[in-house]
Each structure stands twice: as structure tokens, then as C-alpha cells.
Length: 216
Picture 1 (cartoon, rainbow, N blue to C red):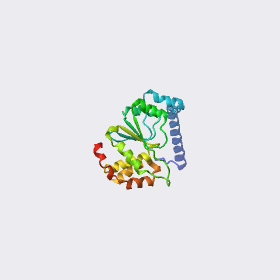
Picture 2: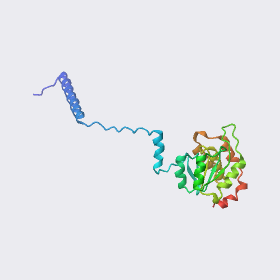
Picture 3: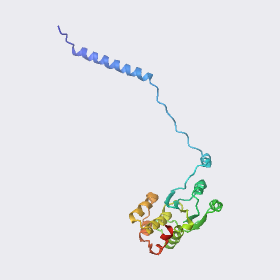
Picture 4: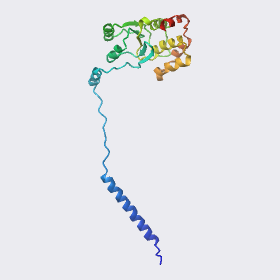
């Protein structure tokens, strides 16, 4: 004889099974180990952060990059970058700002036997930007003279003035204009200046072509 289970009884049994499963899961959870939490270490105070650079670590300047064999670019070097610059065995620094070079930096250059070449280009914002063509040419003559290499080109941030010198050098080396602009934009980021792009586009390299032989 087949027993028929009433609907109310089926509901009661289902509820009992669900309750048993929940209790079982609760017991398992109680025996699990809580996850380990590793808090982030607090930031170093400014004095300790500066001292951390005295352990032999080489710290490059802002926006540092290699342009070509023996030619580098960056923003303004700080004292924390001197050890790194020393490792490059520089002969020269091409400084593109009109402000006097800081005494601390000058002392480092003198001790390291590095010659300073300064070409004072004003760092004005658009629409008052005027890029002196002649100073860019004079800077390029120094940059492309192998007797001055290895050398570092820098301005304040390593973006606009440095970007124009490097861009004109790329144009002299027959880079296509789109590649020249791409490199400039990588360093200028959100602060691309249309005046800089226009200057590089119109820059006449014909009078500097003889310098490329000394660079090879």
C-alpha cells in the first residue's frame, strides 16, 4: 500500500532540511580561521624619507630618460639625484632656464668635473610663449658635439624647453613629425603647448645638417 505525503508535511520537511543545512554551514564557519589583514606601513616622515636616499640608492631626476647614446634629458636635478648623475659620467649639462644655477648644483658640477652650458629660455605660458630660435640652435650645437658627451639636457620640469630641443634634434635626425610630436607629448602629458609643436614643425634644420656627422 502506497502512502501519500500531504502537501503540508512536504513543506515542513523542506523547512527542516534547510534549517539543518544552515546550522551545518554556521558550524563550519565557526571553525574557519579569520583572514589575516596586513596593514600598510605608515609613510616616512620627510627627514627620514630624505635620509633613505643616503643608503646608496640611485635616484634619477624628474622625467629622466635616455635620448640617444651619451645624451640624456630630465627635469631640474635635486641634491638627491647627484649620486645618480655621478653614475652617468657626465661631461656636460645643458641648462635651458634663465635663472642662475643653484650654488649646491654648481658645487656638485665642479667636484665632478662637469661643464655647465646655460641657454636662458623663458618658461612662459601660452599665449605669451616666444621660443628663441637662435638659442635652440646654439644648444643643439653643444648637444651634438661628441666632445661634450655624455651630457644631460634639462630645464625646470623636463617638458617644454627640453622637449623643443630634443624635438628639433629628432627632426635633424630625420624623424617623421608624428614621431617627434609623440615623444614630446609623452613628457608634456596634459600640458602640451601648441606653440611648441608649431615651433618644431617650422624649425629649419638645413643649417645644422653638418652637425649630424660629428654625432655619429
